[in-house]
Image 1 (cartoon, rainbow, N blue to C red):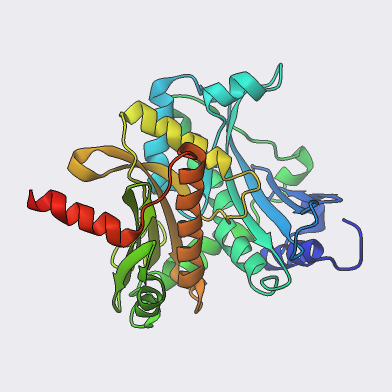
Image 2: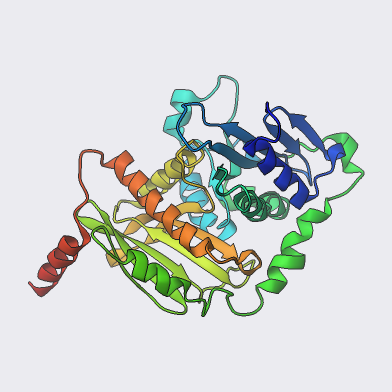
Length: 357
């Protein structure tokens, strides 16, 4: 990266500082670095937007190797990867190329991989907080890779742990940062959610819940919003009453789309959306797409993001809602570009008439 202390360099430096990255365990590159806190490579990169649009924006990505040689053409693997990711990730995404994408763009001689990913879009307005949030959310990637990889091949029915730690580092053992979840996140998640009683959910409902394209309610413990999605609505919820199986209390944010299909088709859709989220789309990635049972027991794509108690800060809920709204609109544009979104009052009136009939 050129220039003195660019926004991208500031972001990288903040991540290095928070993770206490040792130079002896890294390979530095012009646009970032590769790091081995354990057996799996973590790659951090920062790239500047080149189209001249303002404000100056840097795309910062964190990727951790997880499994290699994954059977992406096996329907059972696709379904299991989609379903399992909901419980094994939540602060980041599991990503692999769907078979169709691999057939079109895969490199000759390479085998498909499954990796973990987070992204953020850093500007002068958020450089003081977003890189730190990215570092604290994405540190769960190498932590869980170290915990989960050995048994995940059996769970998913394929793949091999993508271990690449250089021989010279193995004598050092595991980096202390891999204890972050056990020593900080889990203890802080043992009590009630830190978002309860902050009035942020009520504020969000009052701010966005009465617009033409958004309707919702909020109280001390959560928020429910519906946003226009064609002639239907996507459902956004922020919850404090559901504990993460690994991290305890915090804030669970979910997005449920009103698109339905078979288990195979929805699992494929989720794989595609997770891959799409790793390209430049101006929506930070702090969570994972996965199937969810929706109306009448139908399968539909959902996005889940969990923010641990340790990462509580005023404004995080507001940013999370904005990112979920943008994510719903992105999918609508990608999947149904020819259709327009009806205003929420019309959608609600149509729904009431249908229920009355």
